[in-house]
Image (cartoon, rainbow, N blue to C red; front, side, top):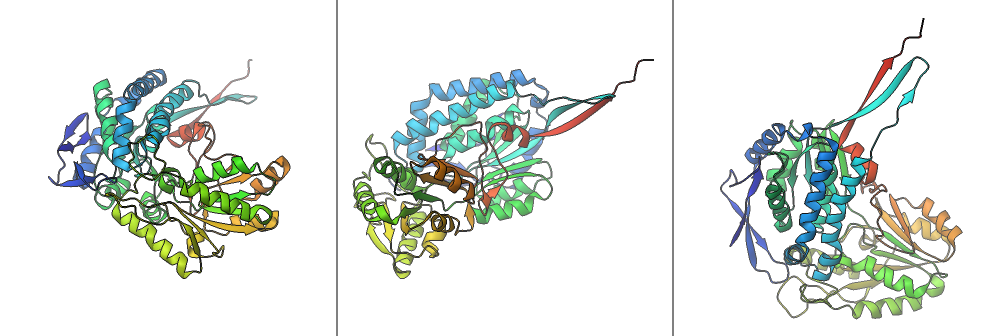
Length: 474
């Protein structure tokens, strides 16, 4: 059986604990690898190795070249990595092949290009010249979740390295395969020892001591809101970026292109089995088209193929674990108790693995728990509205504020409504259409800070102003 070791100081090493964690394939329930069970001793070793690295002394162009080389290696191994990601997460291989791995390639190439051309403006005074330089933060802790493993890990690693920092990465213990593959290709490329370190293990045993370690200068965390609060408390005065949960509204007006809206909202609700923080799990539909939309949306949901993630035509794969499936089923039972009607889905197919058919829930209050709490599974709720004002109030009726989408042919309405939605990102007549130059992040319980484009370069560096007095000529 494959064993995933810690990667510390340019070497693959056994965990200090001498213990291992089972990596379970969601689609079969089989154990497919043994993962190093890290602890605080591993964290100390990794921080020490990062502190000794020569990475910060490399030039911007040298670092950009390394990022391009990493992108080339990922692209060359796309098919193997896609199979690995699909097997480890349970997601359809078509999604891993078409989105996750290409996005990892794009992340490294984008930040390589951006850092090459990133300059801070100089300021001229009458008697002095000001200029700004940016220094690496130092050692950064990058903690990523199980739903988009290499997609989100590369989103953090690329800008962190680009700005001259050394990385201690902690992926989810549920999906470690592509993180290990990334460590191996970085090792083969020969980055300076200690530049990139990878620690496997549980959050309480690796993540907690990592975020509290005095040798860490910045923390970038993507995950659940409850854990995010613990990370924020541990961060104290260090730089912190939190991308947390979402309960995102999809607002469908009666003047929309209905065919386009059905396709887009279906993808937003159920992509990656609904296990994306940006999923549009609350569908707010204007009353004039509500019945027609509901009928077509339910029919389209029933038509989605649930099955083997390795099959090219599979739309819904397995959930990440049996425990998570039970959590999602618990919310469906709660929906019934709250007066909801399950229009379709929520059933276990007759096969091994952690599968659940996509569910659509009607008749819930907009304030019901199932309509306001993050389920993070293939479940969406439908709610009718009458006016723009009502739609805005309903969309904002949650403690989360990550994203939303608006479907309308009226561009004026799209602008008016979008500006009043309490969230960090709004898509109009589309969903998850990403430009890597724009800010990414949420408000309220959905997080702190922004990453993406120049925001990532600024987060992973410290600005220093230098003012040079210019004496007047005598």
